Image 1 (cartoon, rainbow, N blue to C red):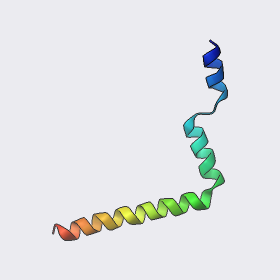
Image 2: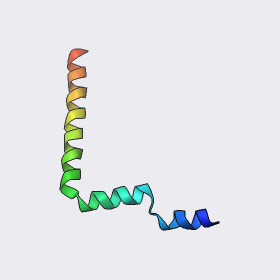
Image 3: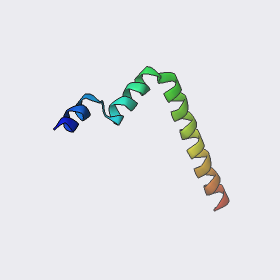
Image 4: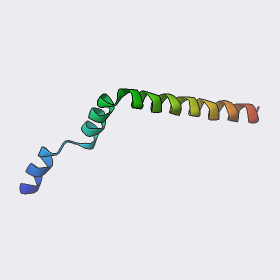
Length: 51
C-alpha cells in the first residue's frame, strides 16, 4: 500500500512530457517542423526513386 501512495504523488511521464512541451513551445514546434520536413523529404525522395 505504501508503494501505491508514492506512485500517486509522482506525475506520469505523459503529464511531465506535456508540461515540458508547454513550457518549451518554440523548441517543440521547431522539432515538430524539422521532423515533418524530414519525413516529407524522405517520402518524396522514395517516390521519385521508385517511379
